[in-house]
Length: 169
Image 1: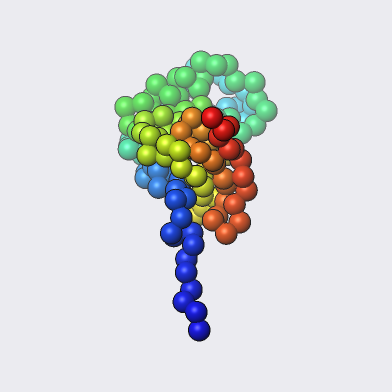
Image 2: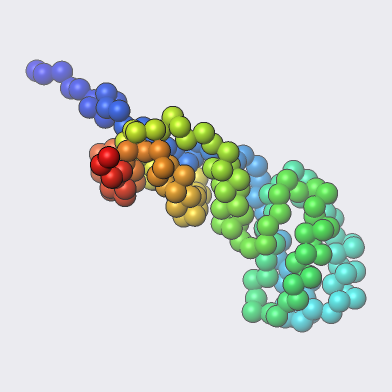
């Protein structure tokens, strides 16, 4: 019987796995609706009182997303005020959902990577992740890799989808 050879392992193909850059830490969403009258009306005095009495220390060293889950018309300052209260405790705070938070975290991380290791190499951006990697992170990864990589694919080595091929020089 012939020896089975792993051609993928022996190829020049570089795998860029976004899970390797997934920031560790608890993520939490603060929904402003909890401090609105009947979930829709913001009364400034009551809102400020709720924020004053809220236990902000529960967000110590966590990543925080601030949003309003109802169709309430909430003034811009309300989210900012929540962010001001949570700032001394949170690692990072964003306006939006947990996915927006993860996207923001990846934006910061991906902008600091040295992509020269991928110069003139075929790169596969690994798909199928066990962690919640947002779509924006994949798009950013491709954008950062494009000036360096000879080609970019998405998925797994056995079933990669071509995304980009460097023009011939």
